[in-house]
Figure 1 (cartoon, helix red, strand yellow):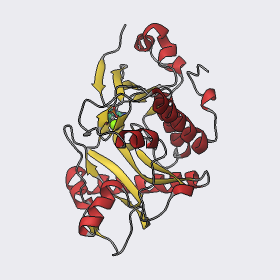
Figure 2 (cartoon, rainbow, N blue to C red; figure 1 turned 90 degrees about the vertical axis):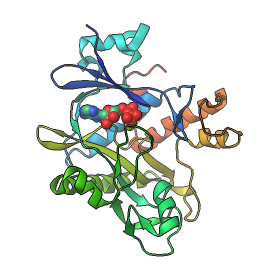
Figure 3 (tube, rainbow, N blue to C red; figure 1 turned 120 degrees about the vertical axis):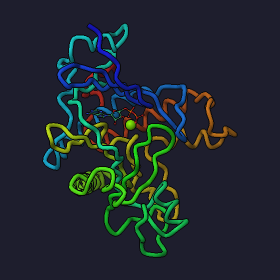
Length: 299
Ligand SMILES: Nc1ncnc2c1ncn2[C@@H]1O[C@H](COP(=O)(O)OP(=O)(O)O)[C@@H](O)[C@H]1O
Ligand SMILES: [Mg+2]
């Protein structure tokens, strides 16, 4: 029996596993400047999945999560077909069995540092998602406190940064407060843990959903795709620190004359290999484990 595809996203595919369960498979696809590149990055899907499990373990007492199991042996029989000729081995380490949630229509971003669209807004208007911040902050500067800075979850086009009050209008006061408290606490714990490994979590995006009436951590959690990880020793306020993982891709693309619109140029093999290496290193530094010990290892 094959599983029905319920969602094909930029990076993940979701399949119906019956009984309000889903199989979520992380691919090796990579996007840069919001365009999906043609070359897969070996090991990226395993890194995203292993990293999510690592953090969900650490955050288990902050909130419940959608995770049932990432053990390939726990996947429903139809899942083997998703791995192509390799069968179950083809998705081992990239697939998770999860509970289906009613997703909140919010991207729950927490920022500990001023970067990306947050920095752009502050530089232009002195505000962050509508909140007034002290004057004179620099790009990449650490904020006095981590801040919950939600955005909409656009089905088309770009997500839009919104204020906390806008989030209250979208999900109600009680849910917004719970979401904020869960996400800020999860960020604090993760940032403190990563810092001991020389990595700054500048910001991250959680996606929450409701399962059995409780707000749960869903989707991917604190991965390189959902977070800005900076090597602490390369962080300088006033500069734009390179993100830990996509730096080789971005550097290479920026040196071409590509206009950032599809189709993207083909990545050379050495850039693909360097990027794969960075993802694996990020996982191994942050978790203190070897990716070779995660499901689906082939080398
Ligand atoms: N437990 C869950 N139940 C239902 N939907 C989920 C759950 N966890 C994550 N999702 C949704 O699954 C999708 C994951 O696929 P992804 O490739 O990240 O898509 P996108 O391109 O929309 O970010 C997201 O739309 C996310 O909101
Ligand atoms: Mg996503």
